[in-house]
Length: 196
Image 1 (tube, rainbow, N blue to C red):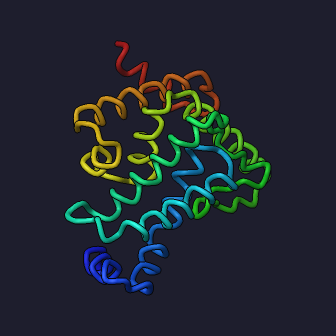
Image 2 (image 1 turned 60 degrees about the vertical axis):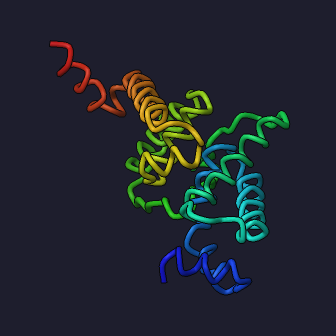
Image 3 (image 1 turned 180 degrees about the horizontal axis):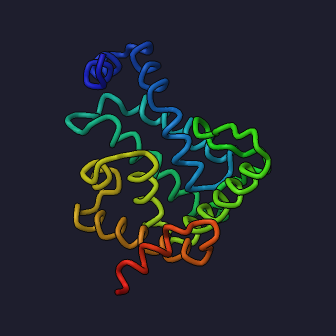
């Protein structure tokens, strides 16, 4: 059953249909909130609140795709989180046991694990260094795989703005990764290839 059918049933009060939507979107929604606010507890609260608000307002959803609408609710809750003066999100540290749900990869070799942890730390720092608008757009596109049109709908901005934010964010992340050529040799090679 696709989202449209589930939403149609949920709009008629079918809790089982809405539960299926929760199962489908809870991990990507939580991961997005976690990357935005940096706290597992706050991300879980935002995810729960987003689903509660979606259930309360599901009857008002007309033509917008459910996924975009749900992520718009969550992103707005993240903005509210920052407006209340909460700390700007620091992504969780895998070494501290903060693996992102669904993204952990077991690596038995301690040297490989240490290098992977260091690369993950630098990538986290590069994303943390972005301003909030670029960060949200980048996470929605490159981590959640949303289309540019979906992101424009979630953020309520023109398509060109989304493309610009993502391009600028990718450029800044690339520049940040170039500072660690031992960990990201390809980042330096790309620059060399364009510099000739």
